[in-house]
Image: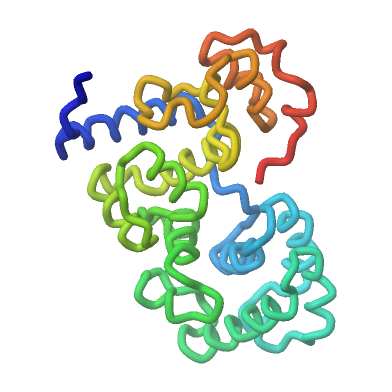
Length: 259
């Protein structure tokens, strides 16, 4: 039995770029799934998204954003009122504390404006490096890699890195792609993780990355089985992209809430 030689750094980079191009074709609709119209709203929405789906956050934020429009509004918020508004997102007491303290910190240190530098963002209450990169990439157009649970799972499945620390993963993956691609790459990887490459049972037999993924076979490889694992409004498009009859995608998969 012969074994394949270990992948070279150049080989890994080339495969990573091919994965990136395939994801761009697979998920042309990839975007930040948290509704927002400015940097403050995105910061708030990202804080609320901890241990909560983006869909649920988007159900809560319209009333929240209408009530609190500025950092000063959050700083002076009535705790009980805010807790009631964000209760559906879970951990609402801790999140209320973070939002009030975020408003205060912005007013005290940044004239009520969300800063545009990573080094400043990570000093703010409720904002870690992942959240900071979301804000930079989507509110300010500053390229950043968002290492959430989906991103971490997929890049390790693809053997693009063996790192487990999010910051080390960020740097390792950043070295494989041009900086200008970082933000959209993050969206596409996360889209793929939510819709195709699930944690427990990835849809391997209905995946556009079959020839590029060393973990192929982790989930069902039979297309007729795998296609039923696709999720989201474009599930039928995803099936068609790999040559599977889109009619095999059950309606509940199309209507399924992505995690």
